[in-house]
Length: 279
Image (cartoon, rainbow, N blue to C red):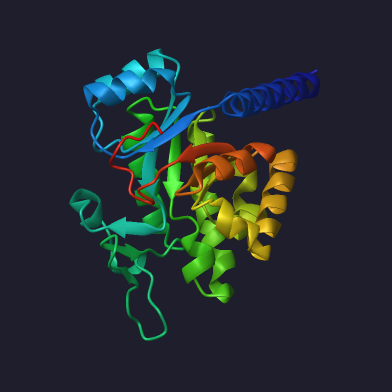
């Protein structure tokens, strides 16, 4: 009798998890418009946001009341969190970093990104993983956001030596699994990192973002064509939605995105998301 009850409980729990996952997948599948905006709210921006299905915002900048207002209007709100870099401007987070939390090359030097004033981190560090999880808890979960958007995940593919990538991906997966366990309904997105997505994170994320998705370059790039097919396969298998950001060739880029059922956004300022654009 006890075994039967135990089995019934397990089945029910599995059905709840599957149902929750399916509901989450449907939420993003229904998104037809989205914006990536990392500055403070403005009256004009809030007015425009009424017609937006999904927003990626900077939770350190945007007022909680503005976030709640967008959610009441039916907008899914994701909080931006830098995963593979620590920003020097984020002093509260930076001062918590320990020596082992930074990435070091063979010459034992840190990897610094001058353009962003940030350092590459060591995702294998348990301490750093804990810091990242706590940051999501503080800036996303406690503020009632619908999801977290992990930027710079692609750094694992681009800057970490191939021999270390498996360990870094395992560290990232540990963060994702922990967050999903703590908050099963939390939606998760990642920026770039197509290899990391396919080899490690796809079962734990709900969407991936492809920045610089521009028609002219894509049409002439065999690698890009292969990635489009690759992401289509992952979307069908793991139900990971694909969100793209075009910096130019708006009409042709949008047409290409829709052809492959990718979610499209146009941002003429490139990777600068502190201005609101409607065209």
